[in-house]
Length: 458
Ligand code: ARG
Image 1 (cartoon, rainbow, N blue to C red):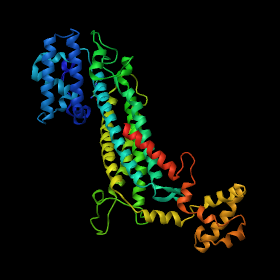
Image 2: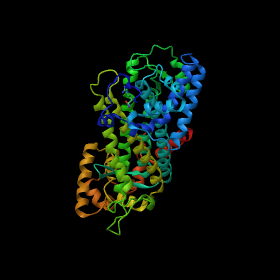
Image 3: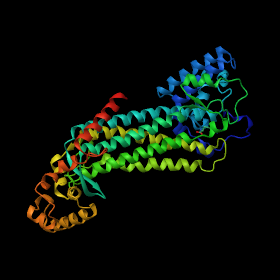
C-alpha cells in the first residue's frame, strides 16, 4: 500500500513506478533525511504538536533504522519511490501507526530541499578541505623551485623566462579564488527550507527557529514557495565545481605536455601513471588526462540543471528530482580529482636542467634587449624593431642573443655595450621583473611567504 494510496482506485502501473522512482540514487541522502527528521520530530514534540512520548518513540525508531541502513541490511523498494517514503514506511513498520505522525506539518517538497541543503553544505566544506590540500602541495612544490627557471609561454610559444615557483603560484591563486567562491556560496546553502510544507506553509504551530538551530542553519527562507523551488544553491555549486574542474584541467594539460618527451620538463611518479597493453615502453599520464576529460561531465551537469530549471513554474515540480544525479556525480568527480592532484604534484620529478636549457635556447630574453635599448634612450617602438631584426638574423644563423658578438651588435646599434650579456642571462631576465606581481626572485619569495602564512592560518 502506498503512503498516498487513499485517493487512488488502482495500483500504479509498474513502468510508471520505475520511471518516477528516485530511490536508486537518492538513497545516498539517507543520513541527511534521518538527521532532518530527528530535528523535525523533536520540534513537533517540544511544541506539543505531537505528544512528547510519541516523539520519543519516533526518535528511537529513526535511530534504529539509521543503524539498519548503515549496516546494509535494508533493501529499499521502488514501490515507495524515494528515500523519504522508504524511510517513513520502514519507520511505521518499526514503531507502528505512531510513525505516521512524523510527517505532520511537513511535505516531501520541503523535506527533499532540506536533505539537499544538508548534503551540499557538508560537501562544500569537503571541497574547501580538498582545495586547501592542493594549495598546500602546490605551495610546497613552489618553495622547492624558486630557482628553477623555465620558459613562460604565450600562444604556447616561448615568451619570457619565469621561475617555476611563479608558474605554480598562479594555480595557488586560482584555487584560492575557488575557495572564496565556495565560502561565499555557503551562506546561501546554509538555509533551512523546512516549514514551507508543500508550498504555502503549514497550519501547525511549528518552530522553524528551533529546527534551524538544531541543524546549524544560519538563515530561514522568508517565502515558502521559494523555499521548495529554490535550486539556485545547486546551480551555484555546479558552477563553482565546473570552474574548479576547468582549473584542474588546465593544470592537467600542463602536466601532460610537460611530461611528454618533447617537453621533458617533469616526470610523474610511477604510482600515478599507467602502461600500455601493447607498447612496452609507454608510461601514460592517465590521471591528468582523466581529470581533463571528466571536466566535461561536471560542466554538463551544470548546464543540465540550468536547462531543467529554465521556465519551471512555481513551486515544486517533479522535474526537480533531476537535480540529484548531477550533484552526486559532481561531488564524486571533484573529490577524486582533488585527492589525486595534490599527491601527483608533490611527487612529480622536475627536470630543472631541461627547463633552463629551453629558457636559454629561445629568444625569451628579447624583450630585455629592447628594454635595455629603451634605458639607453631609444623609444620602445624603435627598440622593438631593432631587436626584431637582430632576432631574425640569429634565427637564420641558428644562434641565440648571447652568441652575437659585441662587434656585430654595435654595427646594428651602437648603443649596445659589453654589459648587455649580463642583462640577457635568464636569471637576470627574471629578476629584472620586480613589478608587483612579477617573477623576480625577491617578489616570488615575498608572495610565497604570504601564501604560506595564508595556508598555515586556515
Ligand atoms: N523524490 C522527490 C525529489 O527528489 C522528492 C519530492 C517529491 N515531492 C512530490 N511532491 N512528489 O524531488
